[in-house]
Each structure stands twice: as structure tokens, then as C-alpha cells.
Image (cartoon, rainbow, N blue to C red; front, side, top):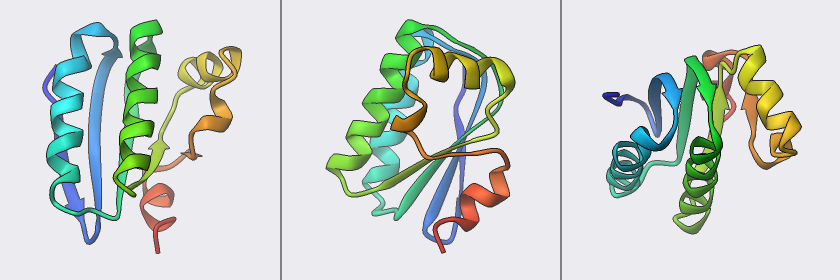
Length: 111
């Protein structure tokens, strides 16, 4: 999976597609560390095209959360479908992330 991102003022939107699993680990970690180096105020993970998150994907999302906290970058998740929302709920991780139904709302939440 190729990760793409785009800057909106002080916020970077990272677009994810497909499944968040072990295949994404290196790519997402590299993207997040590169974005953090640009002194961004926040990162939004756009998950509107994500169909599934496995256990390695959950660990990866927690790594991103922790990395952002350590670097004083706010993190938002946007566009989770019913399946991904349910996975976060079942694993009791829904309160670990600031989730927004719409990407635009997630970006605006930084203002």
C-alpha cells in the first residue's frame, strides 16, 4: 500500500486505503516520522477507504498515537466505516483516539 499525504495549513492528512495490517507498518511509520519532522500541529489519518484493521494494524495505530504524543502532535482519525468503528469498540480502543465521521470536520477541529 502506498501512503499519500497532503498538507492543509498546519495539519497533514494521511490517506490510507485497503487494510491496515502488518504490510503497512514500515510505510506508515516512515510517513509519520517524516511528517513529524516538518513540525506539523496535527495529523489526520483518513480511513474512509480502509476496509479492515487487524491486530497488527491496531498496534500500528497505537504506535502512531504514542509517537504523536511524544512529539506534541495532535492526532485525529476520520472516516471510519462501521467495521473499523466496531473493531475499535470491541477492543475498547475507541476512547484512545479522537475520531470524526467526516474528514473536513477532523481538519477543522484543529482550528
